[in-house]
Amino acid sequence: MPNSNDQSRTVVTAIEYMKKHLEEEITSEELASLVGYSPYHFSRVFKGITGISPRHYLSALRIEAGKKILVDASSSSILKTLLLIGFRSIGTFSTKFKQFVGLSPKQFQLRTDDLHQFINHFERQDKLEAIKLTPPVISCHLEFPKGFKGLIFIGLFPRPIPDQRPVAGTAITHNQTNCVFSAVPLGTYYVLAAALPLSFHPKDYFLLDKSLRGKSDHVIEVTERTEAEVKIRLRDPLPYDPPILINLPQLLFEKEKNKANLKKFFIIFLLN
Image (cartoon, rainbow, N blue to C red; front, side, top):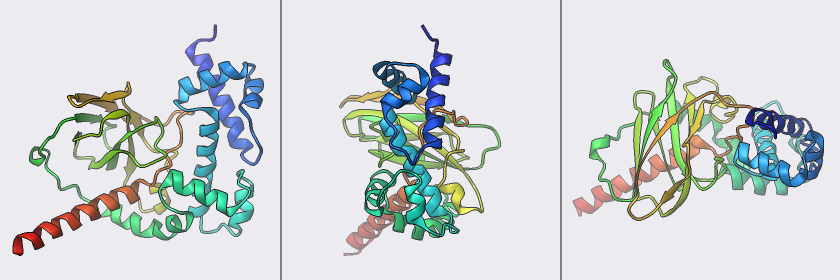
């Protein structure tokens, strides 16, 4: 029976094939045949290593390739390029892109520069001791390489891939190592984290294939009485890690904007 290292190499072989043949109609049966597995065994091993199915992973790779196209201002024909990564129409791409990234392709392009400036000027102001904790509570402790400077995004996701809005999320600077999620909705979640080093290049905040990342060792079942503690060690990406698709700077911008609007509301309320 193949060991875990053999299975990891098998999955990486399949992923590399996907990346080189994004324009083709790739099936799980085709990938299974490529690595010498039965379709059932291949799908089980693939999901065991990556956390998601081969089909889901392929869709994520195509969206990640689409992000690269949109960030690259030199792309002369977006439609022609999209055909090379497996999309047959702008409409299909736009629907999938907004589903996974959180913005339409047009919004993603237009917001890149503004969000880049927002992240570079962001400073976390919240004080942990000032937060009133309401169960269920999940406390996170982050470990990251010495010398890292930037923002670390942490979120609770229903799947082990950040391809949709988290049910709860936050960002901390490199000067912090802890965060707490309070009043967490009941459900089953993965705690995922990604680090964005400070950069003068906008694309470094939106193309995250080289970003440090980490996740909780186990899925967390949140009940009304949950008070969980999670330790996450940020590391370099592994060859089989799923792409980070959700637009992290946009999520942080929206959260800070909502906080500012709420603060403004309370000020007006108190004055009246």
